[in-house]
Length: 398
Image (cartoon, rainbow, N blue to C red; front, side):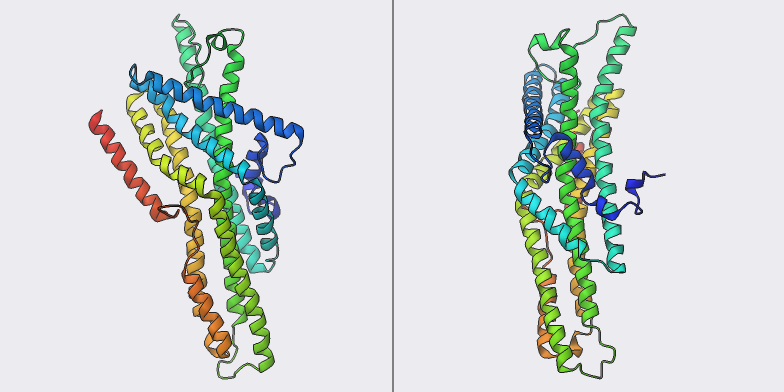
């Protein structure tokens, strides 16, 4: 049985960015969150923890490269995600006003779609967004927790064999010696553990925004498609609509064209907000997966489980981006096909021109424009091929 908030029976309005809102509110970075003094202090504390964690992990990994490559990779693999999470945190803070405006505008536009068929679209895609982002949250939570569990189990086994406890943190980091000795060690351990969860919630927030906006834009395009087809419906193709009826259709068609233009404008605005996040994510994802696979080949026991979970989490992140981009592209193509298949030829020349203009505009599919590529399932295929090449290279070397 799924929790109620993952089902279609859950109140639709509460599905709207539910998981990203929960994740980012947890660290004080949700754009619509009231910025009180306590929230600002809490968000700065989380920023500091994440930033110092990135430095400590990177320093540890670089320090151990000439000493032990397996230990170095055990630090450098998660630090790539930590640095990417820091980029996402900074981008969300930098664009918080623009994100707040987008969230409110898209909410307003989707709330206007109230017919039974449109509510069906909303229920389908709202629930899908919540389920997929919750899946990402679960994968990230399991990945971060597995590092701590691995460290604890390793030390418990060492103690069972009469060996000393290793005073290290769950994620390989370099700290001043007093922080890795009692009585400060438990505090350091908890802060490093929280560092892992900050990394997770930043991913869930940023990736959830991307997927959510893509699916909500898809809803708007599907609703627009229905409105265009219904407006151009002609009961008897042999009878021409009256002049008054044609004038009404022209006015409503102008409103539909404006709606289409606004969705395109919102997509452009989203591209401007998400460009750094998405570009950094796709540049590093193949490297992270490839490094994780190398770690799987180098480690044994619990180490393999940790990096298998890690690889699955990164794979889910890439899937969310590509799935969201593909949904927008398919909605644009469906809008063009449905509009052209409607009874546009049974109307006046002006209506025909407006209809064909919309068809031409819809054929230029809306995409989240990122330098060098656009997120789609085709892009996912390319990433998997590149990752396969990295794995093959790693196997040949090892």
